[in-house]
View 1 (cartoon, rainbow, N blue to C red):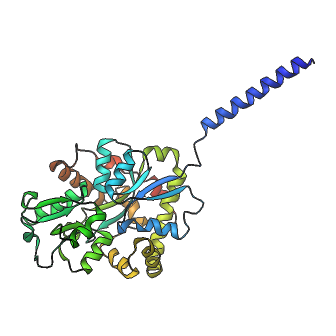
View 2 (cartoon, rainbow, N blue to C red; view 1 turned 180 degrees about the vertical axis):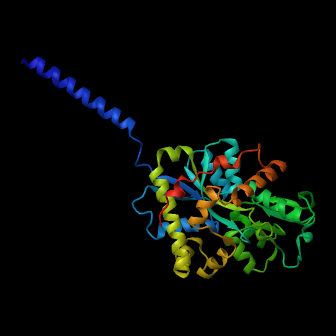
View 3 (tube, rainbow, N blue to C red; view 1 turned 180 degrees about the horizontal axis):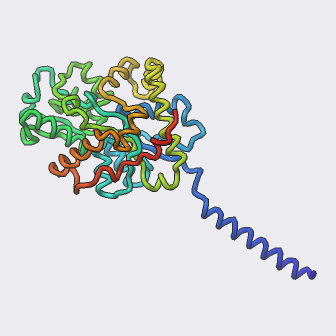
Length: 327
């Protein structure tokens, strides 16, 4: 064999090897990119951070990303800065109606007093808010909650002055007298109640209407199913740990939220957290409570122009990860 022939065969073999390597790389899903999950300082999302603190996400391609509000999470999702998020169910519905690539893979909690309207100490009830300044986060949930509270008291948004406030501004705006009342939750709720604010309305008065979810994109489901399964498994392991070791779990969560463990435990009293078995029944619709509540919510949101069109709630429920979840 001549040197020229040998070199030509070597060159062709090298080219073939490189071509095959490129082809294999292009056919293999990306496995080294973390699944980015957004959340905010809502009590119901803290079990995700508890899972991280307990080491359940160690060596997993999962990154939790903090945002100051649900509004910022929605923006980040639209901009593809995150692949999923802890979102209130109304936010998930809005995204589903506008871009159709979002799926609810778990129910984190149902608010049962965790969302509140707090007013000045001298206010006796919601009627006292007539003509007053009420701070509300500019989200569908904020608009929905204040609309429902007013409706329950034979009032409308025309009876109050709406002041748009981000969650991070709630405590300061109230204490500085920039608003007379505020629609709030989480650490701000705890601190304002301790400062003497009067509870005027809470989510226990509209049971089952405020639900928080764990959502991911359809692209993430296709590209990162193992990471999503690890996310779900870890979260429900953390919920189980919390139920069995509430004091230690609260101590761990308090470090991030900057409130005391006792305050954390008190905050959890304002919501219920469906366990794994309850989630399986809710998402496969054998328990119709979720799908019925979502159907009602869609109608209310469309009627109040908070949703651009009617959607089928069942179309955004995905129970594949809940079905396989292990704790």
